[in-house]
Length: 164
Image 1: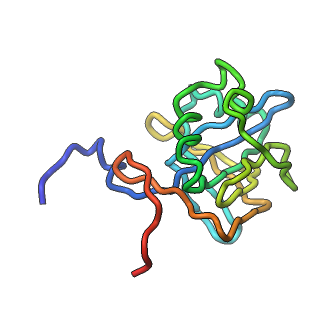
Image 2: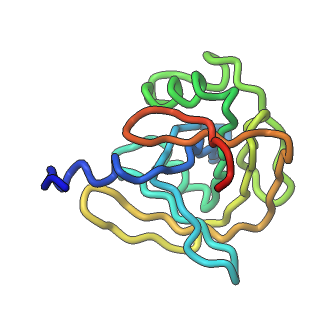
Image 3: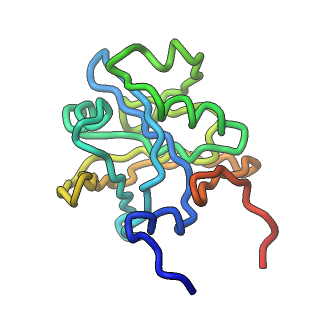
């Protein structure tokens, strides 16, 4: 085993690729996020780690809600695109032709084609280093049982392989 740069620790974690969508009034945005995890089963709580400088962060704080859309393997290019441009610079939904669906419990949109969409109500936040951890209670969930979730490991996208 070789000692390595601790700032590269996240590269060693396989993570789902999520697209976080939010709507605050007439403004909406979507961004890619790989710092996403479940932190409780009862109640179901999701944590999303976002820099406070992000446009999505401002909208989530204003709206008090968001959707965690777990990208499917067919959305790798889209997840990459929405993570490289700020919503302050234009409408990503229109610019990238992102198809949405209405959520059942929140006003933020679901991203069509996602493997899973979790509608969340913001219940807490805490600043941790260069990110703010946003905690959302999952109030509704939509699953495409045939979709394959997109994963990220060492900055590369993957499709899950065989079960062991």
